[in-house]
Amino acid sequence: MTNYKTRITTAIATGSVLLHALAGMTFASTQSFTITGNGSNSDSSINVDHDTDVDVNQNNDADFDNDIDVDSSTGGNSASDNTGGDVKVETGDSNVDVTIKNKANANYANVDPCCQNGNTTVEVSGNGTDSDNDVDLDYDTDVDVDQDNDADFDNDVDVDSETGDNDADDNTGGDVEVKTGDSKVNVMIKNQANSNSATVGGGSGDGGSLSAKILGNGSDSDNDIDLDFDSDVDVDQDNDADFDNDVDVDSDTGDNDAEDNTGGDVSIETGDSNVDVTLDNMANFNAADVEACGCLSDLEAKIAGNGTDSDNEIDYESDADLDVDQDNDADVDNDVDADSDTGDNDADDNTGWAGSDPSITTGESDVNVDASNTGNMNLYGPDADVDLSDLHLDLSFDLGDLVDWLLSHN
Image 1 (cartoon, helix red, strand yellow):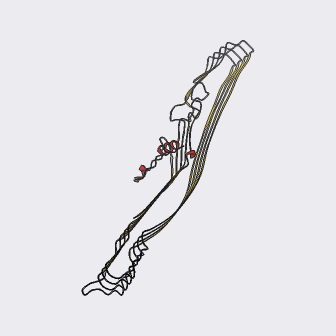
Image 2 (tube, rainbow, N blue to C red; image 1 turned 45 degrees about the vertical axis):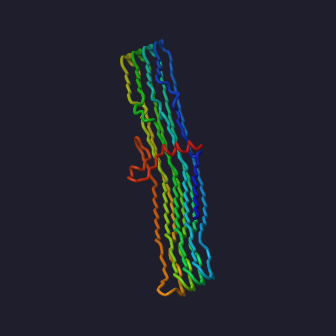
Image 3 (tube, helix red, strand yellow; image 1 turned 90 degrees about the vertical axis):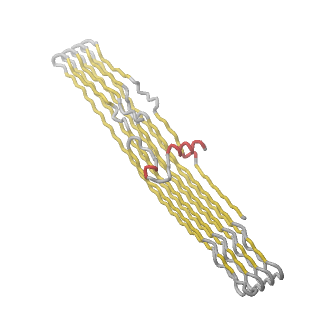
């Protein structure tokens, strides 16, 4: 009996990046800007320019090349030109088991929060006649998450399993028996690659509050509050997977010869030939959850009780720009060549005793090829997560599990 077991598990741990950004954003939880109690003809200004720029780049490039060549043979026996007695040739089993598992390229980004979500109070009050008072607040938040994966898997498996090719020829006297064992080949290739998950905003739901007031200022005063809140969120998720699976299996339990024998019975029994090939390809999954990027949930603006001929203005501008781009490109090439043979036995030109009959028994030939390809999924929205159970498949691919697995092997 010959047993071959080959198992290759390949992973790129560095392909997993766990990022939690801006957990302690520099924005204060409560901000207060006040111009109050200044005298006549005074000139007072508050200028606040707060810019936050978050740039997350996660790039993975995996190139796996698995080349497996297995030759398993228990045949090639010869028992020929013997005189007297029985001749028996028995070949053992040949079992080949090849398993290839490739995992690579997982990105996970959590950016929280995506903008200023504290409480801001602006007040211009109680300033004298002819005073000039200005408050200028400018908040800009720019979040850019770029996740790119490129996986190239090339699996080449060549298996030859043989239990036959036995000769028992030109024997004189006695019985001749040739018995060939079973040939079993099991090849499994499992490829998993390219997952992106981005959460921006942390799902907190509410932004901050803003109160802007111009109250009780003197005659002919000029009071301005200028508020500008801008939030720009750009999420780009790109996957490119190229799987090339080439499986060539030859399983043979036959090709036995029992010829030109004289006397006795001639028997040839060929074992079973079983070939099982499983291909499981999973690639390219994007999940994006962007929440709480409106920045403000409550706004109060008030101009009241100011003097004659005063010029009062509150200018509020808020821009929220959200761009989510999810792109997948999967190229899967499965090439399976399975050859299962239990025949090609010869029992010719034998001379037996009176009433004896040559016997040839051929075993079963079973070939099972299962190819499963799953790829190119984009999910956007709250609680977006990659879980193939939603597709009612027996297979499951959970991004969190893959990230944990990659990190544990770093």
